[in-house]
Length: 474
Image 1 (cartoon, one colour):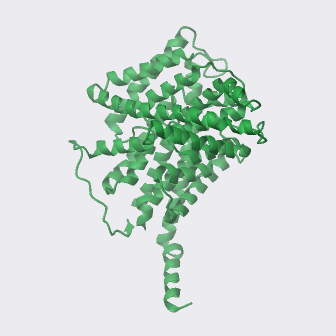
Image 2 (cartoon, helix red, strand yellow):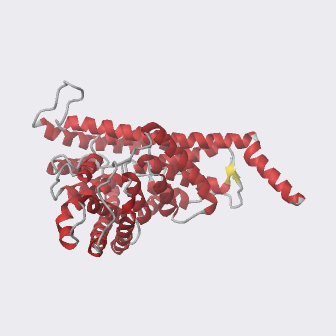
Image 3 (cartoon, rainbow, N blue to C red):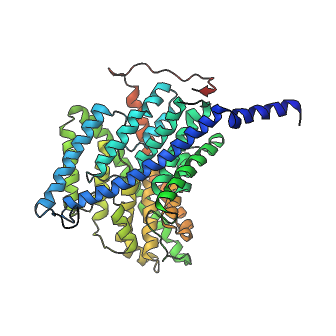
């Protein structure tokens, strides 16, 4: 080994391994990744407690053993009043104290990668956004609104990873993209105990490209946050539980079912995405017109949908999806469309909350309703297989991230023999969805978000541009 090469390697070791500055950087990275897992764990606990609270409001149980239960007809109308007032509360807090926390958080994370404005990135991934996202999502989880927790987990993860760049020096490519991608991927991985899905999602949806110089950082982030979740919840924890009754010995006619399911799920998912994009734009204009009446109308709409669905459209839909996969409950045909409408209203309002859980629930409802049709076309398929394929097809149609959708379902159920069918329906659904919604939901919302920030406002000061030759960020 020549002298210059030995000198270069020695400097690399000193900079990355042996120096105090390097160990400080590694310690902050480790702390941030563990914190992402802790926040995802907290969101899971908050969702469970929120479901218990809202079940109490619906008169389904008491808050504690032997406690008082809400009687009828109060149990019918109290949830409607609660979700309406909660919508007004969240929107008011968001607009008054936590601007920038709106939406799922994934479009905002994508937007931070699109911009080169340092101050804009700092503002979107700040401690204020972090606190606001956690607080407002917690209120949402106790309100009965049709939302999930994975989008805010992505935003919080990206914010935590970005904030450590203020306390240590990191290479420019990590400050600009790598740490944000790692935080977002870790948020998905920890929310669902799905490390491979978190890794794929960070590149497929957030970055929309494979970045070799950042992949190591993303993998480390995902591993650390996932290990924390495994230590807390156990190595056998699966989001939806183990699905073991399906097998992969399909006939040619049964394999043909992926086309039917992929087409139906793709077009319906794409239609939902298009409605959400247009609904968000309309709700935003209405918010400017009246910031009191608009959230009350949106909240009342959720209340009406909850009444029509007999309370099934409230919440993330996690419990309903588990029941459908296990075959415990037969939901009516209108369960899926009413849940989709409630999810659309929730997303259009711009309150912090995700769409993964509700979209998977809608897909499960579709699968249960469409079982007779699929059995006519491809007899012999087990119900669990059909429901899982509909979940992935609809979800892929909504978010247009087919690989993530297939992988996350496999990781959430341990149904590895379903990998090929799920990939097949995901790709078909993706192609069908693009015929309805050319720009993906997250990409469109990110572009809308950036366009809104570029409009001059009274409280918006000029934003510093990122130095083009910056090698490190303090």
